[in-house]
Figure 1: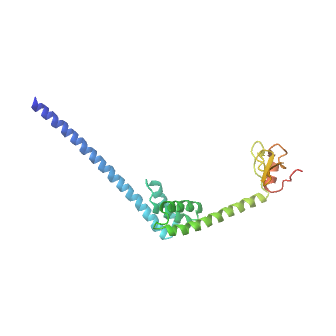
Figure 2: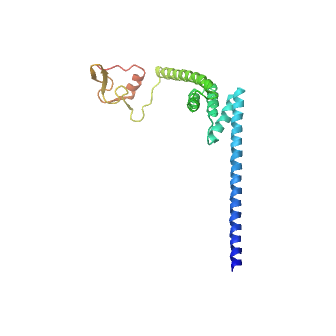
Length: 206
């Protein structure tokens, strides 16, 4: 009886040990896969930095973007290089976002903090100029003989009074109220009126 129990115990112990060994093997394989995956992603990042330095910014963008999309934990250096490369591609808003992220992460103590600050200033200037040009283009379009389609109702909420029919002004005397001179006290403009207003040609009612 005792011998049978001993044999049973040994069989159970052997099976348990085999299961533990199998789990260890699976765990090791998973760790090896993760290591290889991370190595390949890091290689893409390093390759992106190389192409950035070689002034091949489109290729650098592809490789750095791949690293960003696949890394579980993004290193701060990657945010710097992606932000810098974005500026050199003329993607100023993207550059501002990522360079700002690097400075938030590293402050003034980061390896690239001073350089990141310089590139950020350039990106902000580029972004302002880009928005200025976009605004000028929009004004040019509206100044030409174009019309805005107002949809099936052919009417638009008055943008001057926001549909309230009243314009409120605040000064040191308090608030003053004035009837909106454009929407005829209905809060809406028809499509022709709206297009004239956009072009600065809609006459105010007395």
